[in-house]
Image (cartoon, rainbow, N blue to C red):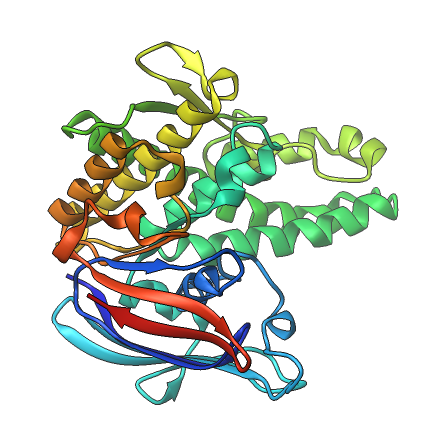
Length: 364
């Protein structure tokens, strides 16, 4: 299984310095609100492609008032190999990634390990705009196919150029043709990757014995185009409408992820707060089960304050599923009692504030 064995934070958020030496089992972090528990999870999330679970700009992360930049260093044991991973930012510089001492693109991180997270800001997923649900789907998709990030970036780059032409009211078809061909190529890959992900999630949910409800997911396409040739034609035909709007109105960037609480045949947006949370937990667990089956190793899970929204029975069920997966899950909560059902199956750390920043202490 893939898991971190060491994690060191330097001048990261509320931490001047912190080190964790852990095993493959779950890690429970408890302490008062504002102590720095979520900061640990954010640091781990930055060991995967993208901007992490808070989507913060690199310069926002550095500990104040030192302003000396920040560094995350980790040792990974997984998939038959060990690696040293480093993510850092120096003042005035861009974020840098190093793997085994060598500079590497962020996308390379997704091929070393998979990291999934569930944080309180995602509780409104079914109520917020479609862009948040697309981002959620694309994070799941990247966990199965790391190359999905490259396809998405290439599609968005070509679309920005096309939108610039639309805003400038350029009408020469030759200016659009090359960009639309690029959008169609990458858009078809995006659609195929997303469809594959929905199939894998459905299969993982259907075959599981779980205390959490099944969510039926579907992708509502703004454009019915699913292959390169059809999308090229659709973009060309839609140019008059796009020119009037000043932006691209069809394509995978407009797709809508829909979810149904299967047992009640109720759209997720109409479910209770507790049901919506349970659906999210169910999807994260299904994602983890599918990855464990595909890769032979479960992903690392980051579950922020998830226990506070579950009753004792569901907490115990969640912990049992995590342990059955043999996943390294980093969990946070305000009190040690929230992790009582984990017992000695986990490493427990108390997080507290001090006059020099957040401190961590292993207990039990």
